[in-house]
Image (tube, rainbow, N blue to C red):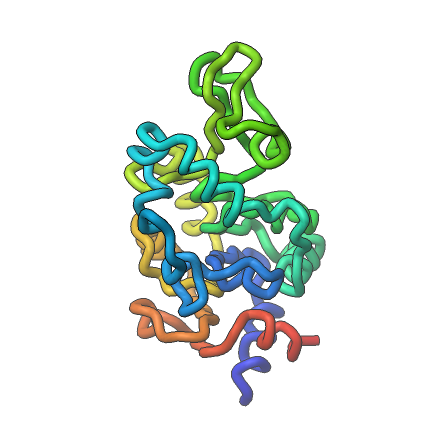
Length: 239
């Protein structure tokens, strides 16, 4: 049996699927993978991307942070791809119960998916550091000036999890809950090396794990089915 046929069989037999996705889900929409050879971590800046996207750098070099953030993380005009659309279809069928994503691009929501747990936040949500007023992404990406400021004068920060920052507790709790209740976990487009996000896989309480990724992961031995390919290529072969 071909691996795609096995995947289709697992999906058909399951009625409580959870999808866990990483950067590889969004690359087909034109968003670069951070760790690929042409990704952000291999680009040349005055500071390493890991340092720029840290809480300390945001606090101490806010202007430089926003220069990088606007230049590299603005994906407001990016459209969902076959993966986002396929997951929306599974959700409409009642099979997919939740999407857990490490991505901050909001493409799952843009595709119409309702239950999306964004472990690392979203570029679409932004908060004043002083008065906690909420803003959409336009004030960050479209507003003139170096640093986006609230009407109260406070600095606006994207609701994305930077290095040195903890994940949102409510999102963690819901992530663990849906993983424990699922009967099929599909992991795609992630090397499962980012901690603590990757550790949540251990909470899966079901029988079958499918891993779809171009490269091997440290969790391959746990999986029922492993497909070393892009998620886009795999889904194109499903009915």
